[in-house]
Each structure stands twice: as C-alpha cells, then as structure tokens.
Length: 398
Image (tube, rainbow, N blue to C red; front, side):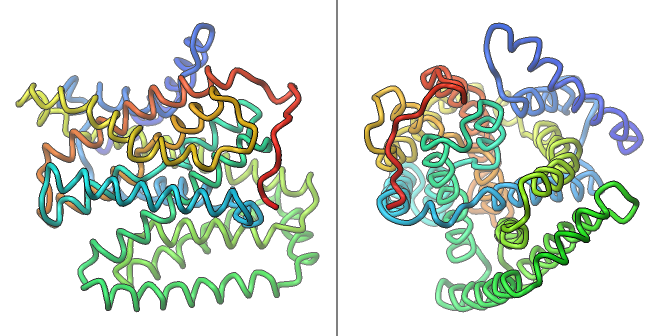
C-alpha cells in the first residue's frame, strides 16, 4: 500500500518544497532541501505516519544520492587546486579529520570514533552548489574557494570510508582503492582521447529528440562506476563522484551554449526528480522516534552543530581567498561546516556494522539537517552580495 501512496506523495512533497521556499523567500532564503527533509519527516512514521521505508523507493533514493554526488563531481575544476587554495583546502581537511577523530574518541572510544570523525569532517558540496548557483556566486573567487573546500570535504571522506570502514583491513582496502583509482584514471584518459568535436555534435543533435544521448551517457557512466565501486566493496558515492569528474572532462571543450543546454537536461533529471526524492526519503526514514523516546538526546543535536563548526568550519577558513573580509571568512566557515549526505552515508554504515547505535545516528543526522537549514542561510546573509557586484578578491590559483 505504501508504494502506491509514495507514487503520488513523494512528487507532491517535491512540488510543495520549492513553493514553500519561494513563499518564505520574501523574508528569508532557505534552501529547498530543508523543506524536502522537513516534509519527509512530517509524513514519516514518527509524525503523520503516511510514509514508511520501502525497498523499491530506496533504490531510487540511492540513485538520487548518486546523482547528487555526480553533480558535485561535475563542478570540480582541477585548476583551482593549484597553489595556495588547493594546499590550504587539503590541509584544512586533514586538520578537520584529526579534530573529528579526537572528538569522537572523547565520547565514543574505539571504532565509533572513526565514524564520528568522518561525519564531522565532511562538507555537503552537492547541497551547497545549488545555493551558490542561485546566488550567482559559483564563478566568483568566493564561490571558487567554497567549491574547492566542498570538493575536498566530500571526496576525502569517501576515501576515508573506503579505507577505514570497509569489510577489509586498511592495507588491503588501500590496494583495492588503488585498483579503483587505476580504473578511474583509465576512464579519465579515455575522456581526453575521445574525439570531442564529433561527440559534442552528436550530443547537441539529440538534445531535443528521443535519443537524449547526453542523459544516456551520464547514466551509463554513473552506473558503470557505481557498479565498480560496489564490486570492489567501496562506497558507491566514490564511483558517482568520479563519474561527474569524467563527464566534466568529456564536455570540457564544448561551447558555452552546448554546455548549458546539456547541463539543463542533466540538472532537470537530477534536481527535478532524483535528488528531491533522496531528500524526501531521507526525511521519511529519519529515526525521529529514537529522539522522541529519549528527549535528552535533543540536547546533543545543537552540540553536533557546534562540533561541525569547530571541526570543519574553522579549518575551512584557511582556504579563504586572500584579502577576504571577516564576514566572508565567517561565511566560508559556515558553508564548510554544512554537512548531510556524507553524515547520512557514514552513520548508515556505522549502524549496519553495529559500530554506533541508531540513537547516535539520529543525533548526528539531525545535527547535519540543522546545519543545512541554518549555516547556508547565515552564510549567504553575511556574504550579502549578488553576482552583479564587483569582486575584488585575489585569485589564489597561482
């Protein structure tokens, strides 16, 4: 019965979310994903009880999560990793990892500290990118710095998950990860070798036909690398993220009109269907009952937000563009501390492996949800600029 209800309920909530965001946008800008999560919680088992976990819906939700990381991968500009910006973004994440694991050991001695540490050192690039795009910040030095911080904060935790939380010991896990890297490098090499002119023409020729070659290739690349990740017992998000990088390389020489046309098609499938489904389903499956059964746990949720800000936010400010104002540095720290998808993924692994309890997962995920709700809102308010205003910060890629 739930499957039949989900067919209309989830699309209905996906439509309501942007309407609510637009209505509230007259007073305060709230990311659409916040409404998707909250609406999912409201219709979930702990509140209205209209929705429930479903194996079939979960498959599509996982595809939405994969698409979220694919989109994040397409936003990676490797030239941005050169020089000061790249060094500081990577160095800041390493500091975050050490701080996160140390804090985890203070509360959860043992392997649980690794789960907590990885959760706290993550950044939700896939969630931040649409916010930066809507604000016209994606191509500014500010947006570029946040994108690099987010890329490191999303990709590096995936590596940590694969090495430390897989079924293998760290040594064999590293070898398997190297094998995946070799396959991914081969895919990147092929992306450079494929005749781009012919491919771009074929992609453009099928954009408005039933062929839809671009969408089919995107789904093929995602499916192939996700399947490879699963076959190697790595996290599937690693494959999805790498797929986005390869697709960006395939389209790197396309003209601006061609690139925008293809992006609109891919984003239509991603943000119009799969990604909203993931966030709504995340809300539906959120274990609110664990918190309601032990109300004292609600007191720990703000502490998770503070931990995200200290562990991930403060080190992220190291990568702020030179000449940044205090407000911009604070905004970068808040955006760097915005985390959810990795928190959902790593805590799910922790519960499945009986490393952490469902209650601990609920607290961490709730903290991630609130970070998505509040931190981008405060950050963009502090930023207080639009794309039309001049940007005077120095480029840190040199």
